[in-house]
Amino acid sequence: MVTSMGIPGVICAIRMIEPMGGPKPLQGWGFVVIGAACAMLSFFNRGADVAVPVSKWGSFIACCLLIFALNWGCNITSYVMPIEKFPKECRSSFHGVSAGFGKVGALI
Image (cartoon, one colour):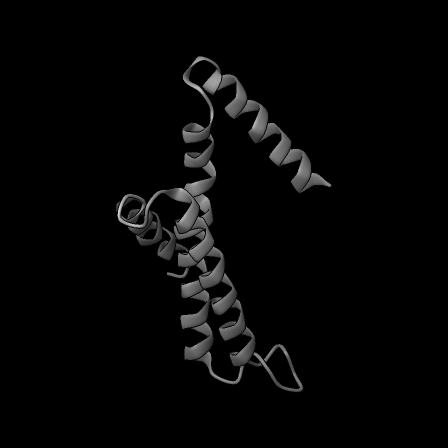
């Protein structure tokens, strides 16, 4: 159930890229929503015993919001932004190079 929240996140991102003014504002707001979802998740999982959440429903909703936000902002824009930024003559090559450097950065 929680993982399926990514599908509406992607659909909302596709519909909101144009009204928000492109992928860069969408990515920025995506990071804001991810931060809010993480803060909400930490609020519902506070206490002496971290394994026992304070509110099971609150924790569930926070997890759903986090998965939605991860797929809404950063997931879509990381594919769309390189396509828009590189010139047509070298777009596919530079998109592959930027994806490769992204993987190297994640590995480091």
